[in-house]
Image 1 (cartoon, helix red, strand yellow):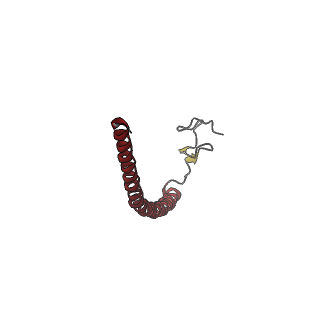
Image 2 (cartoon, rainbow, N blue to C red; image 1 turned 60 degrees about the vertical axis):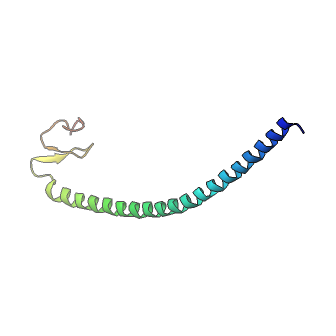
Image 3 (cartoon, rainbow, N blue to C red; image 1 turned 45 degrees about the vertical axis):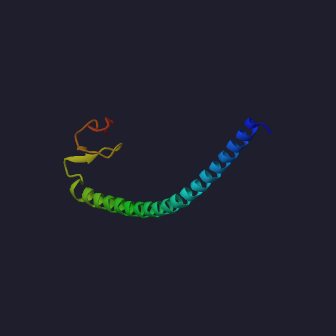
Length: 101
């Protein structure tokens, strides 16, 4: 075996050793990140559930408010296309432009 062959063989062994070290480090990182990702996914699920609850509460609150303060009176009605409160005498909706009956 020539000196050049020996050097190439030694370098190849070093590279393979470095590759093994990198793979071991990568596995350690994946293990650590996997635990963190699992915690983040649990937190995300908790936040999603809380956000959904808040969304429904806000929607229910908005419906109650709309029913009480936005109800049509003798001079107003709702657009049959978009639901905007408009004057009863309006020929077209001021929001969507739909022709009113």
